[in-house]
Image (cartoon, rainbow, N blue to C red):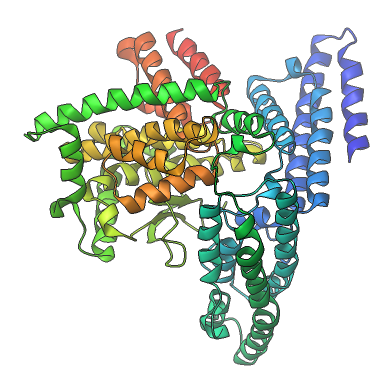
Length: 598
């Protein structure tokens, strides 16, 4: 693959250095564009071969019988070679010969390849499990038929049967990596290990029929005959009983007997590990797609917390609350009027609110430019609800046959106040992640790598920015606005505590104390959030940094364009190119402003 790319690009590079006529120049531009898109297409195909679950998740069934093992040394070596080869090929393409759209794709592709290559320099594989991203849960979700693994015909069932048989090898590799991590003193904090153990324990069942992996056998599609159902059931029961469940038990026992005693009890942040300061600085850069340092982000967070407190005080005055900010936090956290009576009532309320948004979305979004794929709101599954975040979004399939899903966590209702629904629905469903990610999938004119890649700061920044649109949609009352400010406050607090944990060595209790002092938070959520930050260094910083950049660009556009500014057009410009690093997004919006002014 490498030699084919290098020879192909070299030919065009040599030709481009020779004086040519206008017609020949046009020919070179066309050929260079063709070369560029071949690089994109070949990288996309090679990456899916290396990551078969990713292929299945976007509706490509070529590798549906392969599970893949991203924890092996061979996988990391192949990944590094893939990034290096395509960077070489890309760097031999003359960017100046490309049109504006191709130059944008060139820049995004180069940024992504360089960032992926740099990430491989850090030993992420030595701490492969945490309560937020736990492959044991992912496999169970896939095996239960509740995720992107298809169970529509006999071939689908046999594909998953093959994948299940590969699970023990993956778990053995996890154990090998964690053993290496113990040797190198690169291990998770004990509290995170305890959370992972609880999650793995949930999959250890007394009978095979209780296993999530058994669920597809309870609901066969009509095109599978009774005799074939019996055959598949026997095969599934054997693999689940003899291979899958023993693999889960083995991993569980290892975590309890070996990894838990070796887990950290004296530190929680990445900077406490060998090479941790550089590792964390990289994660912050990767997640925010900026050059901001952890210290700069920490200070941004402190300033934003102060600003949002002042805005909340204005709402206290509006609703006639007499008391301190801390007393208002307690009131909105504990008063029964803000608590749901049941998970079912909570789910119904969110669905009704989403319907209200749909009725009014046309006010600030062009209906002709919205995604065709639908979405659903579902409860987070019981086996992961205790550790899951308040809400999350699952992207629809490429053809829209599988809808987008807003997973709503209804566990611990005392920590799920009614005033949170507005911001959370706008963020996770519409116009937040569903509009952005579903639309990105449907931009068929873009190279596929752009349609399926996600820059966290952009995606989560858009989600957080979307929370601020409730007033413009006319759907926020005072307490909804309060909920939006609390959600924004949380993201600002995250800037402080994420950097506090991983840069400044804060303890778990210091994080909790800061949360309790600055936001209305129940203990269950505070603990869950604090442990999330420990598990995902830098990830929590992306939300607020992304939102601040989008808001900054909107303010710039409003100032520069004056009365000709269109919010509909601005939103389209932010969304129309798919997921972008923030610096590239800024370039695109500045270019759009200049075009509008001219």
